[in-house]
Length: 102
Image (cartoon, rainbow, N blue to C red; front, side, top):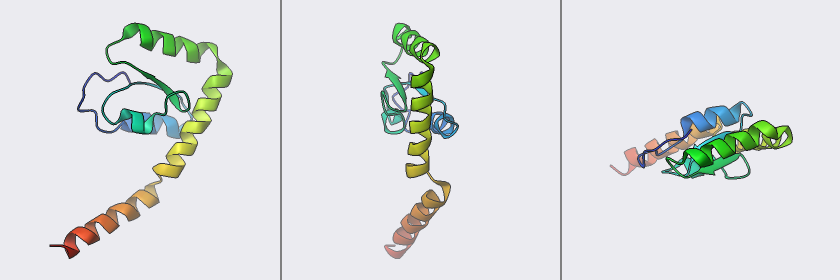
């Protein structure tokens, strides 16, 4: 997920990959560091830095143990923070508060 835009507010693609136990290489930009924990669920790189991106990809290709570990940690993060039912309940509560305060 080598995004180059500061407007990247949330890394849906990163969450989807993590849910499938796939480690993510992503730009350290916008809200992406909230969904990709550098060195734990993936590797964050500077935007537009092709050398960093290639080094990160090579690191994951050459280290199966690291890939598996980051993949498993990514899935744990998704299940903990981005569970569909929990997210739905949180949105419902926000809507209730909004309506109540109008």
